[in-house]
Length: 168
Image (tube, rainbow, N blue to C red):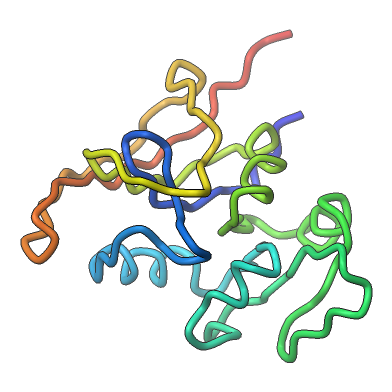
């Protein structure tokens, strides 16, 4: 089942790489600004390692829902759940909630997500965490901005996608 209020926001390399050593693969200030603009005022669903990788948390003006399997986890300013279902229950009445990682969380939510806010860096990276392979035929592109990051010397695109809902 596809949930229109579940959106994934992610920055990936062309080989679907998203992270290494619990850190992002690239630092794109314009992409961090985009992330803030898109997610402010909404709930963020993440795994514990993603939360712990944030330089300062909780991020301002956003509800944080952390999915963990450690029953004694407590994260000040965050809500803790122990399953994907628990996270879905927390955001069921929201217009839009954002899945922000990491790899395991993305894999579990990918089949459920109705929208994908994708930053696609047009080169491969070495990584230890990958996003699920995207079948672009399942998605409709609703917005695209092609950019060049002079500091890093690579091209990337901000692409907004909506899942095509099949008629069965």
